[in-house]
Image 1: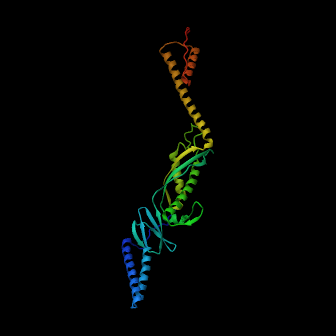
Image 2: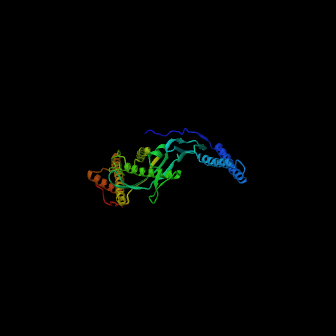
Length: 323
């Protein structure tokens, strides 16, 4: 989207030079008014002229005083002359411009939002609690002021007010970012499942296992939504993810069952390899010859010993072992 922002090209004078002139005008206005009143009281000529000149200089002093602006690093002023956009002024320091130009001060500094977790439904319909942290800043002053309703905002009593304070304007932008961020987070979270239904399917992306890819998608989605407001997302990251309380206990048991099954698979796999090794060792080194029944009994006993969750109690055969 093209930007309509451009740099202010009007006359801007060093503020300290104009401040000196303003002080001189003030002193001249005071002198004119004082001497004018004295001459009028004395009845001498020129009193009215001096008084009138002093009043004019006093008005000039007030007019000049309205043209001073101060800009800090990473700040800007949107310049408007009777409703017409005249550019964005970004010169750092103390300056003086046409006092009939209305300025709106904005900040380009990065701001941080730590959004409270919200409840959304993932791809499979499970309710999850998800929260995000994002860093944003303004990049286009024209869009920020004229493309969205940044000047009017509602307070806690839903009373609309108009303000030019930079803090109030930035709070209005922050509200806009929060609302759009909430919508973007719901949209992104609804495209993924919280966890894999089938652990063997490693190609499926999930909220829990693919945080980097999802964070990048969230950042792109927010950039698209906030482009109209001239706002840039520096970083967007999911910082909280959990099942909703109503299903958390059930999902915890499911995760525990999956963990137990995975552990059992490893135990059985290891036990089978150990039994196979034992049988081969006995056969290769001709320690003892076992028929199929004895091998089956030995395999059963070893599997019970190796796969049991508790310590097994050995039973010593005091009889003879028939080969």
